[in-house]
Image (cartoon, rainbow, N blue to C red; front, side, top):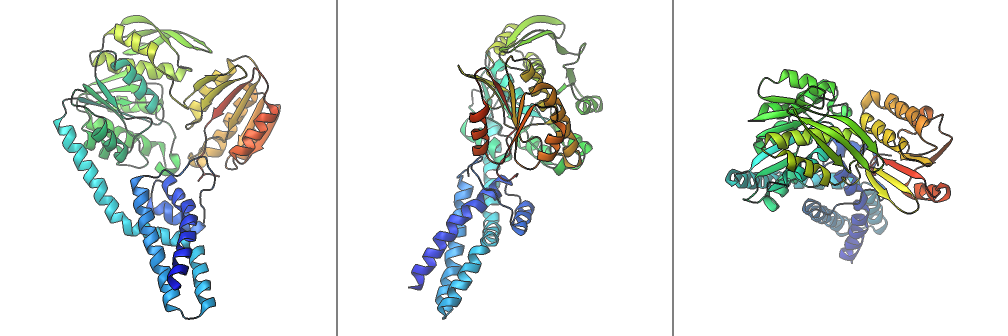
Length: 467
């Protein structure tokens, strides 16, 4: 009978563990973060970011279940008193996060071996490839620049690029092993970083030939500590690029690193630089502009919205030109470049217009999205939880975007609790302000207030581990 009790409690405990394991996944499996969350008993509830059942999660499930059933078998098999058995079992249910933490520690050596094996296989395959490797890093604009460059280069070359926003070692290795072909001329890869040394590691993994630095700002300031640390980490790409680096000159930090870099380099996006855009005219359907590229001028059209995307196009066009793409191919690629999902993506219906910029957000990107929103006719509705991971600057940054919202928006739906006070303080001039703690509450509010012809901007979307 004790085996039945052990199995029953293990199943109940395992069901509860799904919440905790989801939290650990959202914390990127960081041991320090996992311990901190466990001690605070702070876990992710909700359905914004579903648990991704990866092979790693399956292995953690297996280890956790074996550990749980082993402990419950001991409780019901050794302790003779019935009420004491259930007391101990209940305590174990309450302390379930600690057993997950223990499971994580047990499985960690196995995960490290698997990770090393993946990296070794990816490096071995890359060593056989003739393709040139283009790496992109920066604080924002990485994914969009990558997709635009892919759309331009594929006009005349065979190209492979990491999908979506894959920018971690395992995501890059997965792309190399599953998608990269021997016939590919170029491999475009995006590098993300949360701490010093991350870009260095990825650069040596891929063996970078050409680099792109997008604008650098105070994103992830909470983990890096200072903008200088962010700059030094991004510069690791420059140190490892074998041929040359293209710098987006629209940020002070990127221009600073351009001056610091002593080898072959190209500064773009500034008037008079190697490449820039002029005569920009934007509409609610996209933009057209004159691209000045190494002294040559060409007329370009794009479906992408916002001036920041024009800069991303200039960077991508510059790299493509330097790699041998013709001007004709570049113009055609720019015209065919597709909007990136959840990155100022325009979605039109017969009833309303939606601007989906929900993937993530930074101060400059938020302002750009509000500028685009202001260009549309009709009532303007902003739905946003604000910006996070800015350390001491977070409150003032959210007050600032709140003030800009007050100049642009008719309605502001403030999501979540984290930045509620700062956004509300800044957005005093917005005629109508609503608060929503959950996505369901947000939907109910929008159902009540939305009218035909409204334009709704969804700016940023916190995962469930940010309240």
